[in-house]
Each structure stands twice: as structure tokens, then as C-alpha cells.
Image (tube, rainbow, N blue to C red; front, top):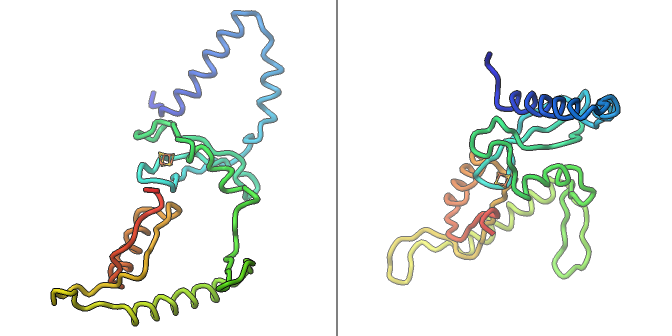
Length: 188
Ligand code: SF4
């Protein structure tokens, strides 16, 4: 019989629990009734990837009515075998937290207030500021006369919310602008 690691763990868990409880003469029906009311009952299982670091642990998201109701490590993923570190284990709260910012916030120079803005506004502004700064500070040659083609006045910080491929594309873009100062949030 072919059985996945996850299937085996489920079966083993049920088997051990059943044998242990029945040997003790316990009535399992209240436990079974409780299990039937669990929040993941009837939820769709979706395998996804933790975005926080390059280990890329798989996790199982339980989705009900279009919402994630539970996340857990995927025992079939060979690298982590179902384990998640504290960041990955907090995946559900990251997704559902009321602290999560879902719209761009902008704080004008010298202002003490954050204002909600549209994506068009913030993307146009970022693009304009990057262009102005690059035009003003682009260095073709260094002090020794060596060709360097670089910008030293912009720092770029990558995010763990992107996957490896997205990071690769952004890296090429950042390099293409001539930036030499950049890092990734996962290293902080
Ligand atoms: S942050 Fe933790 S759970 Fe997420 S991929 Fe890295 S090691 Fe895995």
C-alpha cells in the first residue's frame, strides 16, 4: 500500500489513540463529537510555502468559506518534515491579524500623521523619487577614474513576503539602477 508520511501519521495517531483509550476502557464518543466540531472540519487543504526565509517550509492552510482558518506544518515536506519555526508557526495570525496593513500609508515630510493613499499615488511617488535621486547622484567614475556606474545614495531592503523568483527579479532591477547598497529583511 502506498501511503504518504502525512497519511501514515494520521493513521498512526488514530491507531495509537484508539488502542490506548479502548485498553483503558474509555468511551471515545465525546472525543469524536468534539473532533466533529473542530474549525477545520470540512475545510479545503491547500499546500503553500512559508515566505519568511529560504528554507521555504511547506505548510497546510485550511480554507473555509474563502478564509484561512488554520495553518500547520506539512509532514510530507522533506526539509522540515512538518516543523515550523516561531515565524512560520505564526502564519495564521500574520494573515488574519487586525494589525495587518492592507492599504498603502503615506507620511508627508515633517508630518506626524499617516494617510491612506492609493497604490497609484505611492508607486508614482516612489518611481519619481528614485529617478530624481539616481539622476542627481549617478556616479560613472570613482575618484581613481575607474568606471563604476553606481548610485550610492539609495538603499533597498528586500522583503521576506516575496518568493525566491520575485527576489531574483527585484535584484536584477536594483542592480540595473546601479544600486550598491541593498539587503534582505530575512537577514535582519
Ligand atoms: S521562517 Fe521558519 S517556518 Fe518559515 S521557511 Fe524559514 S524556517 Fe521555515
